[in-house]
Length: 464
Image 1: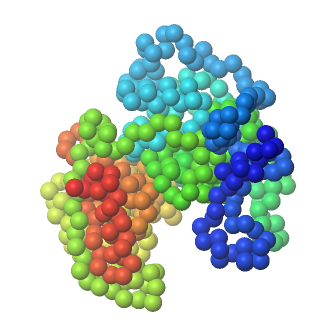
Image 2: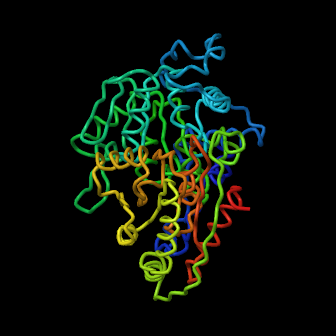
Image 3: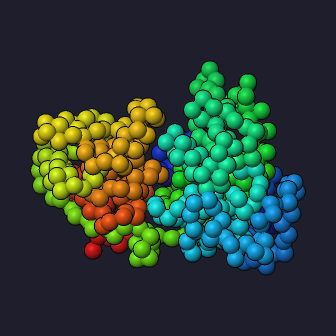
C-alpha cells in the first residue's frame, strides 16, 4: 500500500474555507488542509473506510478489512427469522411504517452511516428499533436539554422500560444502564478542560475515566448529526473506538461545506438512507404545506450586516407589524400560531406588540428553565389561547405537531436552518395542513438571504 499512500492521502485531504488568509498558510507552515489519513501511522477514521475501499478497487489493489475490536454477539432479535413477520409492532404503542422498516434494515446491514430523514419521519423511533434489534450497549447523543428529556421519555415509552434508561445531563450521570441518553456538553466537560493558555486538554479528574466509559459502548447514535463537524462532536466520535455500529440522524446532514461534510462522514459514515419531506407529504405521513412570501419593501442601511439585521428585522416596525397582523388574524380564526425568531430582543418586541393588541403571546427562549419550556409546550398543545413565539431553541428536534400556522420571522440564509424551521410545522395533524409565512426583505444582505431561502423552499418542493 505504501506506493499509493501519497495519492490516497490526497484523496483524504480537504482544504479549509478561506485557508489562504491563515498566517500559518502564508508562512508555508500549513498546506491549508485537514488530513484524514495520518502519515506515517496510516490511521483513518472508520467512517471514511468507504473512500479507502473505493480507492483500492479503482487501483485494483487487493485488500482485507480486519476488525480487532471485541464485539459481543448481538441480541436475540438480530436477523431473527421471525423478525420481519412481527417487526412493525416491534415498539410499544406504535406500528412502524414501511419506510422506517427500510431504514432500520439498511442501518443494521450497513452497520454505520447517516440516516437522512426529514423532520416528522420518526428518526427517534427508528433509532429505538435499531437499539432493540441489536441488543448492545448504546449511547444516544443529543445537544439540548429539551431533546435530552424528549428522547429519554421516548426510549422509555417505546421500549416499555420505565426507569431503566440512563441519563447524562441536567446534573445526572447514570452510567450503569445498557442504554444511555446524553448531552454532548455533559460528555465534553468530563473529557476536556481549559488549561492556563485557554486550550482544551484532557480533564485531569475525569478525562481518563470518561475515555474508558465511552469505550464500553458498541452502538453510537448522534442526533442532528450535521453538528458532527463541530470540534466537540467530532472528537467525541473519534474517542468511541469500540462503537462498531455508528449512526447519524438528521434531515440535513451533508449540506454544508466539503470539509464539514467530510467530518460528519468520518464520525459515522456516508449517507445510507434518505427520506425527504415531500416524499412523506405525498405518502400522507406529514401535513400538506402551503407557503406564502410577504414582501417587505422598506430599505434599511447600516455599516454592516449586523446593523442592517437589527434595523431591518429585529426592530423594523413595518416587518414586525406584518408578522403580528398575520399571527393575530389566524389566531382569531382558532389556529395554533407559532412565530420563530433568532434574536431574544426580536421575540420580546413581538410579544409586546401582540399583548398591546390584546392578544396573549408567550415568548420561549434558551434562558427559560427546562420545566417552564415543557409546561408552555404542553399548554400550547392542549389549548389555542395564546400565540407561541420561540427563539432558536425550536430550530431542531422539538416536537410541536399541533402548529397550523408557522411564521418564520428570523431571516438568515442557512439551508440547514431553513429546512429545519419549516419542519417545525410539518408534523401530521388531526385536521388540515400547515400554512407557512416567510419574508422577502429589500435591504442589502437581507434581500440576498431572502432569495437564498426562497431557492431552498423551491428546491424542497415547499414553494412552487
